Every structure is written in structure tokens, then in C-alpha cells.
Image: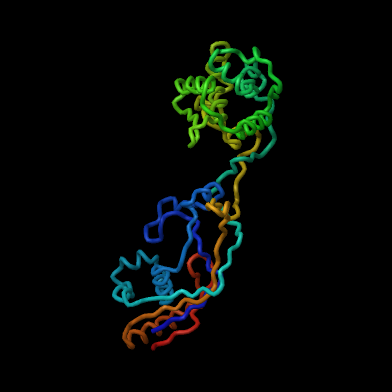
Length: 340
């Protein structure tokens, strides 16, 4: 018996982790098609028509709407003794690579955005300690090393570009520092970094090539300054509930978390993003992978006796399934059934 299925615009990518062959977790399968998650190669799932796809289609055609793994565990799974007799051939005629906008319904927030009005009158920017505290970000690398190693106060340095005491200025300065190129870990830079290592367990100073990262030095220097200023000032207004600096860790910062404390609105929700995975291929450079859609024909062959083929044909006709999904999205229908 042969069953011919025509399909149109069948999506050949998956946006959730886990497997259809397993029970759903309590909170559902994780959405892994956000811009952040798609940077990880293991989260770019490409799909093809498999035996599971075929068995799911056949079960749907005879009216069995259970998940395939549940049907297979049942005593009344129609194809339980027939799966080994079933083969298939996928014949895609058209394959398109499209940019699709994928909706994210889990309530994730944009890492680089915020909402509401900015509160510039927060005590962390208006207190007696504020200039000394945020002034650490105004130091150049050489001055930063002197600050860490020699215990100098910020006002002892000749600063060319002092920082304005408001959230946006601080955030902009952090972003500029974050773009600084790594340095060789030698001389005063190495000494300063080693001192920070002895003070902060979470401090991670090096990249994969063993070069000194600049942003972690400045962020950890802020925490060092916080400790030093506590001997002179009440620094409670500079700390988060967890005792740290809101939105700033020992190694970096997160704009949405930093601005969350200094804005009147909530964090900005992400409602979706284009489905694009970028990959660097040696000899080709950066390659962008988009959503794949296929249109074509699926031919399913069942090597069964004529009486079984007639029974199956009758079951399919009685169920009356006119159209169905082929994998993720897409439209498919049975165009022909041949008993021989």
C-alpha cells in the first residue's frame, strides 16, 4: 500500500528543547529561539522527516490524536505490529530559507532596554560618597592600577573626563569600558588584577587567550571602592538587597537590571525576534542560517497484506482528516492512496 501526501511550507526547524518522545515537564519545554539562545550552536535545531513524523501522521489519519510516545505504550496502538513494515521517501520540491519573526510568550525581558522615566535623584548619585564611588569609572587603566594597588582616593588623580552622576552616564561609561580591547597581563596590570583576585572569588579576569579583560577590573574596582568607602560613609543606599551593586557584578553589567532600580517602569518585555543563527565557517566567514521551509511530497509505503491495506484505507476515509500539520506548521493532505 502506498499513501501519497502533498505538503506546503513545512518548517524544518525546532524552537523548543527536549523531545516529543518524552512527557512534558511541568513548566513545559524551554523556548530556545531567542536571540541570546540562538548564539549557541546547540540551540539551532534543523529537522527532517523521520519515522516518528510518519508514524504520527498515520496515527492522525486514522483518528488517533494521542501523542505518539503515549500511543506506542498503549495496548491499542494500531501500528504496534506494523511499524517495521513501513518505509517512506521524502521528496521536497522547493526549499526556502526565510527570515521569520518568532513570538516569545514566556515573558523574557530585553537585556539592553528599560521603560519609564529615569530617576536621577536616587541617593547613590546625590550622596557625599557619590563622586568618589562612581569616579572609579573615570580613571584610565594606569590610574585604575594605582587606585587598586596604592589605595589612592579618586580625587587624587587628574581626571580628563569625569563622569556625570546620573544613571545614563554611568551606563554609557560601562558600555565604553566593555568595548576596550584586552591587554597583556603584565607589570602593574597583572599586580592589580592579582590583588582583585585575592579580594573577590567571583572575579574572572582573563579571556580564552589568557589576556586581561578590562571590564571585570573596573567592575571589581567598584566593589573594592564600596568596601573602602564603608569606613567613612553609610553605604547602605549604594547596595542592593543582596548586598551588591544593582545590575553590576564583579565581571560585568546588565543594562536592564542596572536601569531597573533607576526607572519608574517595569523591565521591557521581549515579544519576539527574527529567527537567525550566525556561524563562523573557516574560509567563508560569517554565515547566517534562517528558518527553512520545504514544500513537496511524502510517499509512505506499507508492506502489508491486501486485507490490512483495505482496512487501513477504510479507517482513513472514515476519520475524514482533510488537512494536517507536517512537522512544525505547514499544510499537508493525502492526495492519493494505492492498495498495490
